[in-house]
Image (tube, rainbow, N blue to C red; front, side):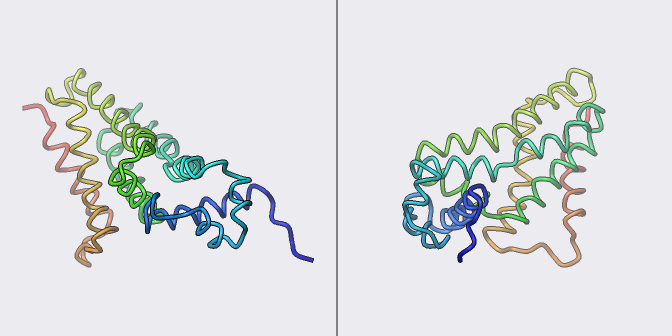
Length: 201
């Protein structure tokens, strides 16, 4: 007799398979039938868990964005006003989570390029939440005189932009860093460059 897979485990399997397919072919380029075949279930089973393809994509965003986990990891450092440690931890969280599961970055780009409404949801749940968090921190440090009078959101974009460029080269363009440059060294360079740029003059 075939072992029955618990509902939550089946849901997780569908999300993982769909995420992989969407990250390779895009939302429009993937059918729910292909998702079902990848999981080894009927298309009806997919719709039993997710009423529409959009619902499935939304569930992927919820599962993959992990923004709350990233912010939980760095918030204590923000509260301690430890600039270097906060930036270092934020970069490390973003890089290591993406390297562990690169489907998130590919999904983000596909959703933007395809221009469907879910791209906005993806942006809000992942990028905007991180931008807003870092911009608020920078504004606070500017007000305290620890940073020069920079535009907080532009400064946040600049720092997160360094991380994103590193990930783009590594994960999408397969351009690996020189073998003598570790992830930690790359992070230290990003943090040092950013902090030097926001130091009061």
